Image (tube, rainbow, N blue to C red; front, top):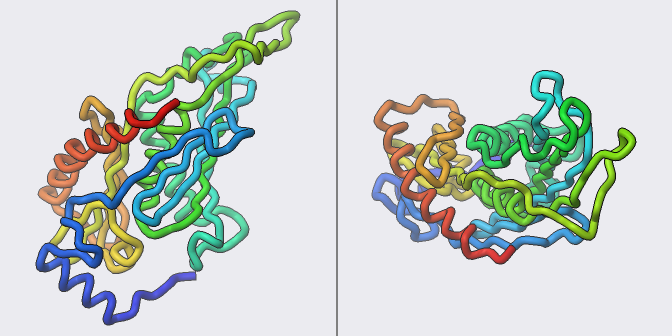
Length: 267
């Protein structure tokens, strides 16, 4: 199901962008208000709720012991899934994952994986046999635009709050000590910055209406030390080299702000 933006709304958004203005009064490179809350799911080993404006997502981390992949016998495993709840947006439908859901999970996963956010070799319990597998579940609660950045922040916060029981091997079985937990080994911090192009203007943190009228989208994942770890192009029209350089430079500066939000949460 595709929701069509009324023509009058589309014209208004485009005209505002031409004049460096937006519906909600923000600057073109300004985020909406951001809030981060951890430990929101009592039965998950790590969880977080992130709100960017009225967009709201919840992420839960569920670890379990499993067999490693054959080509990485000493590394833990990350698996990212996304559920777009129909209550979050009238265009979300129940059933198998949609293309949008799959893309969102893959882009977020790429940011985590390529930034080497989690020290996967420390998730090995017994090489070739037992490693920690981290299942990262993204739940979209309210879609008001820019799910990518909200989900990346929520995953980062949830992973930082994750606790694992101490695990050892006895008689070829994994034994857990739930009295002694350890923090998930975190190597880095990462954030995603999403831009859309409307006319010849590039807009950061788009609202849902801005996404619907945009000609192109670019997601840029950046680590706290200003290294690009993920990038995804969306939309029907191309971006120029200058567009991409602008987005990368802006994402590097904005990532510093986003990482500051993570430093304020209490784990």
